[in-house]
Amino acid sequence: MKMRPKTSEKPKIFGVNPSRRRNGVSRREFAAISSAIAAGSLAGASCSAPNSPKKEQKIEQQTDCKKMMLTSHADRVNSVAISQDGTLLASASSDNTIKLWHLPDGELLKTLTGQAVESFIAVAISPDNTLMASGSWDAKVKVWHLPDGELLQTLSGHSDIITSVAFNADGTLLASGCQDKTVKLWQMPDGGLLKTLSGHSNFVTSIAISQDGTLLASGSWDRTINLWRLPEGELFKTLYSTVVSSIAVSPDGTLLASGSRDNMITLWHLPDGEKRMTLTGHSLGVNSLAVSSDGRLLASGSGDKTINLWRLPGGELLRTLAGHNDFIIAVAFSPDGTLLASGSGDKTVRLWHWSTGEQIGNLKDPACEETLFCDDTRYPESSCRCNTVMTCSCDKICTCDQVCTSDSSSSCGGTYWFPN
Image 1: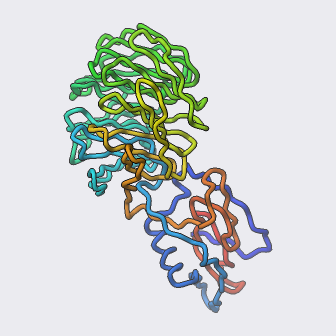
Image 2: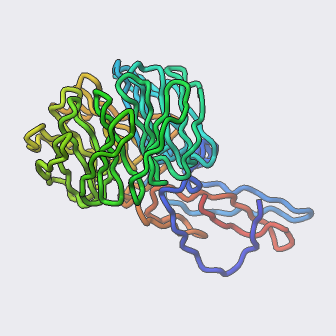
Image 3: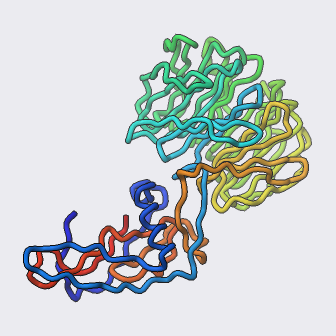
């Protein structure tokens, strides 16, 4: 590691981007930090040079305002899916992993790891619980075997980030939506490309397939929702909306819900596409929607850190679930409708009893542990002060790369702090 000579340089302010994993804390680094905290000080690592005496460097540190936090992932949780038998939950994250959790106890069963360029954005489980599909930043759709997590195949053909994946009811068809403005239909389980659906002029953000397998809906940043006939892939209707972030279709195929960046949810009648009503209740954009298996409930996750539960088809707001510390990105109902799972920018997956609003689980991976400053509640646009004791408000801590002291004849100079 390169060390700089001691200078009179003033402390520097470094921005920390909470969405970039490179500013995160590895297990090895975290172990070193936590050991130092437990000892009550951060000891200086000595860097020796020939014939140069070592000097003890004392570093003052705050010890009264730190707390430990366990999370589900090391980065934001982008998608969650629950198997049809209700025993398995999959969570996809920007930390390049998909994690498989046992339900209802929340035990971590397996961690599936992608390549360095992968940030998993979408995940779906087949109706027979034997396959899982994932979409990621590398424009690839991956198909995994369940429950062991074996990678079966990688489907290529898209040219941008995969935003959404969905199986049809019998598991013979997989659809993928992409920022390349297309939806692709894949034959399962062999993975052959059946058709590419082109009709949007901007990112496809969300797709949903009706229970009877005859309709596919795709939402886009082009302010439209396209309705396609399956299996032909014929576009038969375009609904005009605002920028669409998420869509969901009721099990009976008569209702479509769309969530938008304008904080609104719109309910549409299918298949004619008539607008039924607009639901208001969120203060920031709606990122995710899910309809319960009986079609009576709609869950919406928002940038305002809350989940709203709505009665269908009337649209009455039943309950608001609060507990996440950052924007909600994903929601999913269990098949029996008693459990709701949510994924968030706070790196956690949480489980809820929707009927009572009680949070019954916060899935935690012991490997995802980090130190936070107690006063920090601002995840975005936080900053760290370096070359001095950390007194910053950061969602990811700055760590001492190495503390090194010697006299002026040493090739390794004074004490420096670098953000990890």
